[in-house]
Length: 358
Image (cartoon, rainbow, N blue to C red; front, side):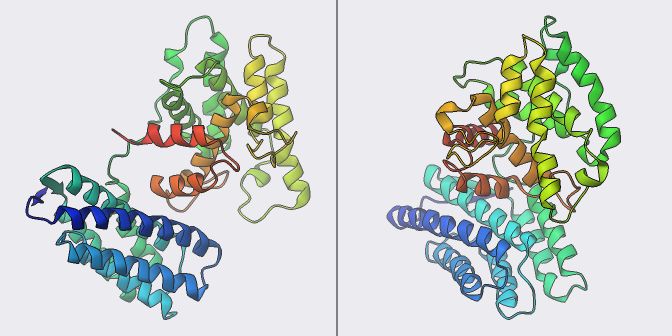
């Protein structure tokens, strides 16, 4: 790690740069999400290029050089995209988001401290990998090499462990141990789900820790276990399908809310867990299913389960196996955009708080 001293910098200029950067960041995040759906939209590609160019230029004006070379490499890649020599794809979007996240951390640290520590070797190595994209026989594979470096060095983010939580459950809930013992069989049937259930449990545990809610963690734990157990009974071809589903297949998938919740409804103790499962596809704006409930009528555990399922789907792929693990930052950007629409703003904030180290 190297040191960067900030005491000689113009603090007013630095503050203005910080404020402008956050405006640029919000615009860049929107553009990246939109370009994933419209990769050939030339106006949006040009706007993203200008955005990165502005960020790089402002860092130069403020005499903050550590990230300028790697941003130049990213700018060169976006220039090739604009020229039609490369096609914009989610990996380029993720690369942009991760580098902007490092700029954000560097700027925040520059305002808060006279000494900023940064990983010069990381930025050099990432820059080298990005530089090779234009000449590589498989550009996407080369992008993955740069992403792999950044993905393991996301500032201030914790990793959600896959270790089992069932040994923390009180003895009065033997059902949970029973559910946990079924998960290896589920993972054997669906190998792409390996670690999924335990990641969901650990994330839910972090999100509920310290928040105000009127249900026990054991209730959402039962919902998480039962959801994945019940889903494993669906046809493998349906669960493994990577192409868009037919209307009948969508109906099959949607019916799982009834199957999952019914399993737990037979036990008086798990009535809340049953309700969580029944409502976890409701949207806070009333556009979800099966009842079209709005936020005030949805069980808080269902809103929590909804967002951790979405987070898992983005970062690890949903039912199919993704060709690479998408960055946490990418998930948070997309989920934040859906705050107060599909997801509760409270639970979006709980997710972000749970993933960042303070």
